[in-house]
Length: 90
Image: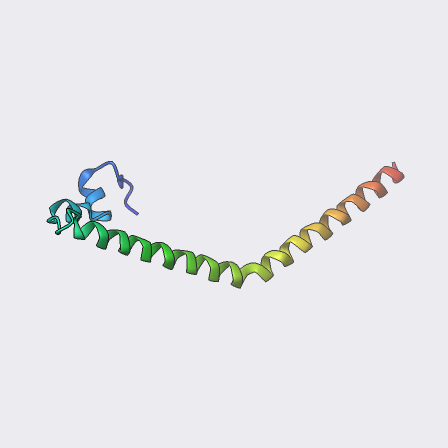
């Protein structure tokens, strides 16, 4: 929330994304870096968590959303009737 927050700053970027862990890891027997796999699993877990939370929020608010859309449609119909009545009065 700082006004000078920027991911272009290497210190800020490494604080938000722990890439230094990946660079410092040692290759395993297959030549793969273990921390790369660990980081990928962590990020996949975070993505799954966010997707679940978005789904929950949508399901919690879907009734309110459809109610608002219905109200919007009703207001649009009333506006159309009102505009026609004004045209007749003129």
